[in-house]
Length: 109
Image (tube, rainbow, N blue to C red; front, side, top):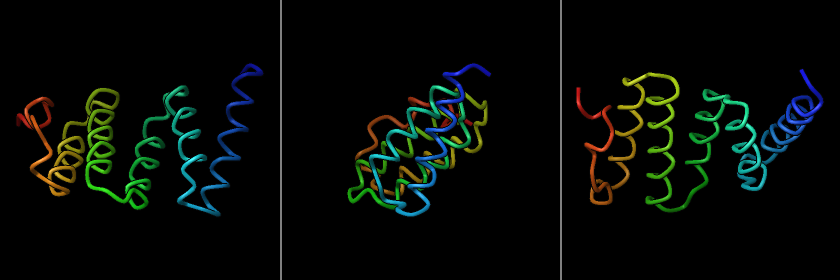
């Protein structure tokens, strides 16, 4: 592990602690999201995005989060079943804002 990886790990630990104290801290959440994406920590990223849905006040923003989770499940983890579940959650938020559910192969079972 090189020095940059250790710094990212330390930064992630700090942001994770901030979120333990203040789960709605969007600055820490956004920074942690970038670190997880860089490290390809897909499961942690999905958990982070899911927890963020509790603090996003409007349906369109939650739909974006659920859609991002679906894409990670499908494209990064090869998990079509959970991608489908995430898309269902997006659809339940407000079906009128989902323009093309067939854009993801998770819808095609």
